Amino acid sequence: MRRIGAYFDYQLEDLTQDQLLDYFHDLLGRLSWSAVKLDLYGLKFFYTYVKHILSTENGRVTFRYKDSKTKRYKTRTLPGKDFIRLILQHVLPRRFRRSRDYGFLHPNSKGLIKLLHYLLKFKPSAWTVQMQPRAKIPYPCCGAAMQIMQTRIKRMMFISGTVSPAIAGGSH
Image (cartoon, rainbow, N blue to C red; front, side, top):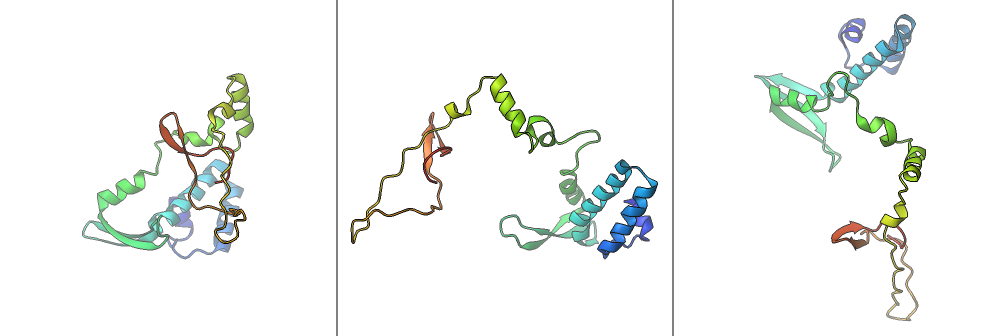
């Protein structure tokens, strides 16, 4: 962030897309991709967290955030150390990697998961519950069968003493 701040004379609030493209194009000509990537992640962090700080007075930070349930922006004021604690919850220690980005947890590893199933002789179908088709519901006026197009509540099934959503078969 120091490098990008110095490049734009520490005026990062209202950068245009063209300014950012020029900056990163210039940076790619001088530095390696790993150095450019650090600036990119720093800028993303700035726009995600720091730009939403509205004021800092008397050791308290007032910031704006989007409520995940209502999808609306709200304002919150916290002591400075609590605000920093909230931000640092999203920062991994140096040399740590998110495990969901590697190995069989990676989003593109469906083939690897199938291979693991084969090697471990694991059959996912043995762990899924086969649901019976739903009984026909007749219309009260004419007796014809209703056709259910969509439901809002997932059907629940008991599997070994616990309630879980229906996994395979039947309509949801």
